[in-house]
Each structure stands twice: as C-alpha cells, then as structure tokens.
Length: 412
Image (cartoon, rainbow, N blue to C red; front, side, top):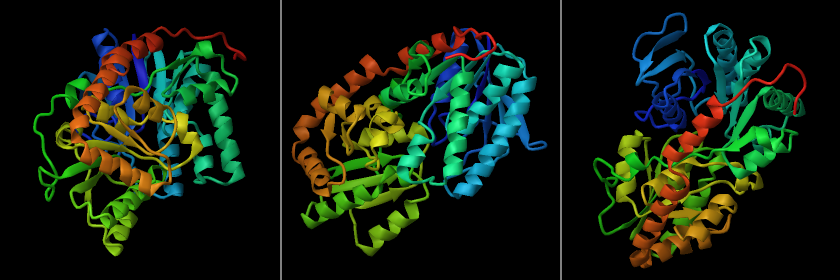
C-alpha cells in the first residue's frame, strides 16, 4: 500500500523538531508499505534533502521515504499574518500533489489545521480513503489562549475543522482530550483512535555522549526545558521559580532552557533586567545531541500556560522524550500528564501559577537526590509499558492501512 502523507513541519532526527512523522513513515516501510511525504521548509526541522529547489519545490529519497519539500520559509519568527500566508501556500501546493500523486491512502496531520485541505480534496474528488491526525484542537486552543479573537477567523477555522472531521474516513487523536473533542463534533468514536506521542527508547535511553552546558558543574542540580519558547509554553513561570530559588540562596540549582521561539528574546531580556543568574538559554540541538543533554540532567521541566484546554488536549513531545531518557519530570499544570506523573511516581506535579510551589519541587528534588534513581526507573518503566513508540507505531500503522473509504454522501 502507498501512503501519501502530508505534514508541513516534517523533520528527520537530524533536526531540532518533533520526529513523529519520520518514525511513523519508517514504521510503514518496515511493514512493507511505501510513503510519499509532502512537507514545507521549517527553521527547526531537517527534511534530509540537499538538492536545489526548482520552481519552489524539490524531491528525493530520504531513508526510504519519498520526500516532496516546498520552499516555504516558516519559523517561530513569523507573525500571525505571515504564518497564515505560509499555511495557505502549503495547502494550495498540497492540493496539486493530492490530485496527481498515485496513492492508496491519503494521510494528513496537524498542525496547522489547513493540513487537512489536501485530504478533503482527495477524499471527495478522487475517492481516496483519508485519515486525519489531530495534534491540537483548533480553533479551541488558540481561542482559549486569546491568540485568535476575530469571530470571522474563528468561524472559518471551525468550518474547516468540521469539514476535515466529516471528510476523514478515520481520525487519530494524540491525547484523551483531543479524542473527546473530535467526538464532541459529532464523529462516532469507532472512527477515532487514540495514538499519543511515543517514546524513542533507542535514542534517548542510550545517548552517544552525555554532556552538560558550559558553566554547570557536576555537583550542581540541573533542570532542563527542551522545546519552543512560545506563548503557549508560559516560560515566565520558570523564571518566576528561578527567581524564588535565587532569593532562597539556592545557587546549587541551575535551569537550562533549550530551544527557540517568539518569546525567547523577551525571556532573555527579563532574566537580564532582573538579574536572574541561575537560568541558561541554549540554542536548539538535534535530537541525537539532545539525548546526551538529558543524560546529564537531573529533571526535565514540562511547562505550559495555565489554560484549561491544555489539561487534556495536548500530547507534549517533551514529556515523552524525558521519560524515554529516564528523566524525572516536574510538571506545572493539571491534566492527564500530571496524573501520569503522580500515579507512576516519576516526578513532581505542582499547581499552576505558583512559583513558590514550583521552587519547592526543585528544592525537594535537589535535596533528595537519593529518590531520583527510583523516579528515573519509574519513568523508564512507564515509557516502555505504555508509550513505546514501537508499539504505538504498530497501532498507528494498523489503523491507517486498515482504512476503507466510506460511500459518498453525509456520514457521521
């Protein structure tokens, strides 16, 4: 079976972005299927293609995946209107691919929500089976965050969401809340499968070289955050906790924030202005090197803004990377991730918007390092037992390749 796979932000492990689509494509290939991956250029990603673009696109084989890459400049530096423009260009280019490329199944994954557009066209104009993967609930999340307030834009996004859900023969949600959100739009649950982000145990459990950032000694306690420095992440909460630790005289605790994002410059400026000296800002690193940093850290920070839509509606890559590496996790918002940490005793769950409680958790971890090996073992056990990417990939492949197109016409 040949799967035509649309993911605008596709990246191999050589990039600093999530690699779910790369891993799922590899799982398809191992199962005897073939894949054409359609993507755009992404500042933190690495598609693996090195040839020159011709008329705005290039194509080649990357680790057995047939990759079509559009020359689209996308990154966290773009404003809202610029991002919308890039999303639209990718959707338009992808429609052409969806209408021409030979395939047995069309698969599309968000974000952005516009990723579903080529699947809609292939479903209704070519009668191709369409599987739609939802990584975030749109427009619910941007509305809850206050990122998008224009009622017309929100309505258009809601219409696109409805059309994508109703056009798809099968859907995949990455968290329990996302599955509930899809079902809440009138989709039968027998058309929805939960396949969360998984744990890359081979990469993170055996790093090639363990390392620490320059300036962090071996006897200091190191907490790391690895990911986007954006509005959704609420990293001011980390600076608040760091400031509290500094006021307590805990010079033995260091925090490293690894990544890029629109908020990074303002966070660095705040740290400088308020003389928060126990926080280090690092550039993104490839996952192969990131594994070594996790091997040298004491805890990982799973941080988001206190937005109720996040509680059960996200499937954070960072959390799964942390537990893959056996890294205890400090989490600062309620929801299913917090429950996993508490139930499996693999870290600390603290209430949101409470810098003292956040600082308390880091102090407790630093003062009771004898507990960390147990937390680490519990994290690794959870990763292997419930979130092994190998096992989840088998479920994903079975769900995608087992799809059969529904008859033309309205269907729930």
